[in-house]
Image (spheres, rainbow, N blue to C red):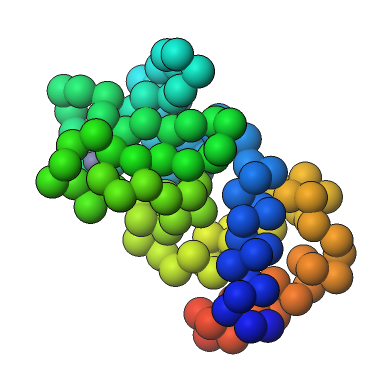
Length: 128
Ligand SMILES: [Zn+2]
């Protein structure tokens, strides 16, 4: 699988994710997350924020960014990238975790796409 195809499938998976599931996968206490103005706000686990909920997740676009300008997450990204950053694992490993947890149907992939992604991921991370 070419990097371009991998990115396209990542975008598809990202669009299928439920923000609440992603918050769970961050090992984040969901009670601390609040919804405000159609956005989710969390204490940023990337720069270990404890005072302000600077991490903003947009559930319509499934993107995130941190309002703190010195945080590496200040540049916006998608939820797969967020999981990759917080769990400190490769994006391909995030995809594998998501496939195992939710299956292809929930991620709106064909069985064939799921197989291709698994094979690609195993090549990239060289295990499992
Ligand atoms: Zn941050």
